[in-house]
Length: 294
Image (cartoon, rainbow, N blue to C red):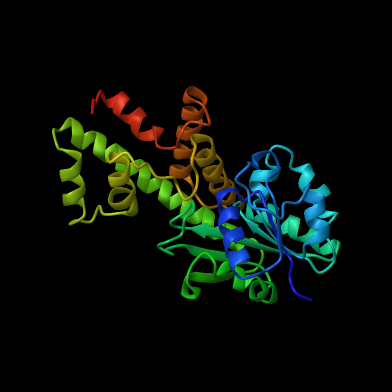
């Protein structure tokens, strides 16, 4: 039986995928809930339950749709048809992902966790995305044709069992957050020493301090372009992503001294500036603390 694709809670990514599916004449339905707008593609499902009833391969951002009411996720899973593959294109704690996979399997479905790393949100012209998937090899093979809409085949990785895609995303987010933090602190110090930011970027690129944050994010930020932490657009989202890494470290008895300090920093920023403030506010706060005016 041919797949009927469901797209749920993916926002701009969903519109991008809808365009790809339309070009290829693949049947699909899309549901955006309260986030839907007049620009959403056709073939809209009236509810998540309708999407579950009509589609047998569903790409969904479960973290976004069910964060406020996690119990709704279990209720929605009960509507899944046997044989349906749910592809969770979000982030989450690997243990929670595995538990959700067991619940889905109990009603005859399967779960594949997929994390997107790189140049997003859409458009994906550069096709620089890296896709990390966790789950059964057969489920990965079934989803692969649709995952290739994001990037080239050589940039799509099957990490292993269910939860491994989300686990690798947690590691990437942690390292990215570290590099952002150190870059902001280093630039604040350099600015107080009278060094122009552009000169700092140029010279750091020639030494051992080079990283993604000071070579990719910082130039975009200084030029007014900003740039999210692997899709985390707000202070609250960064805090939540770091909490996942801290929780994993605690469970596995891995020291996470720096991660805890960084998570607490973002928690404080969320409380004082608002959790919905852009994640780039970290730079603004450090400049304020250091007495720097740009």
